[in-house]
Amino acid sequence: MSMPFTKPTEFYYDTAMREYPVPLKVFYWAVIMILYVFSKLMWRWKMEDAEKLLPRGEHGSVIICNHTSMAEVIAIVTHVYVSGRRMRPIMKSEFNKNKIIEWFFGRVGAIPVNRGTADMKALRRASKALQRGEDILIFPEGTRIRSDEQPVEVHGGFAIMAQMGKADVIPMAVCGFRDITPLGKKIMRPVKTWMRAGDRVSFDDAPADIKRRARTDWVEHEAIGRMYAIRDALRDEHPGRR
Image (cartoon, rainbow, N blue to C red; front, side):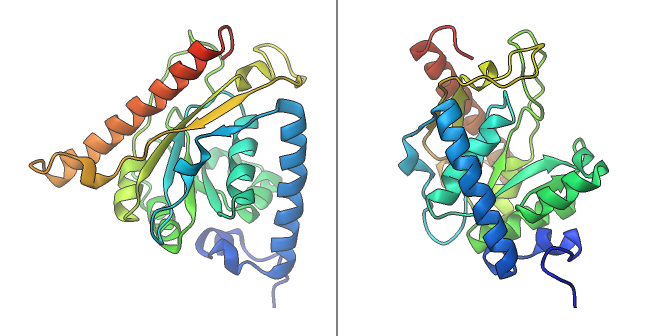
């Protein structure tokens, strides 16, 4: 029989997080608590309008956010965990080239996706997680945006996940996390950061007279627009911070 930490990584992609072996759940709890305290002290973040992240019904939500630093991943995931939820970040499959990262990310709930492809395995895993009540975290920009001059290519797919999982999409945004490790620097700095959740986007919100494919596109564009509107509002409230 496989020990809790040595099961194949595929097991963790396909198993409900609340059904993980007890030793792994203890390990995950300890990691989350350490990162929660560390990130709170270092980056003094607060999730504004946090109640908007709470679920409606039994299914989870697809949460999308702008991406400037790996630090915001820590802040978002730990916030959701402390609020009593379980979250699975979507990660690019390239991370799995490093076996240590593959081992760790697999055991903390991440789901790998092959970017630029119709990765049906990742879509099915995400939709099943949503139906179990787990949340999915996606950064549609696909990579960290380290400067405003950096080209941005927004990746779709999150609306399809939400549709398959019968879930809503919740846009949110962060501000200040880019300043933790400025471009060209490698050492993290203790700086204040901000996060804010927005109003959820439901497929029921889409115009009633449009077809299924157009409805998915509508949800995607509406959610992305709200995400950037929140980001821009945070920037306006905190001039000079990104």
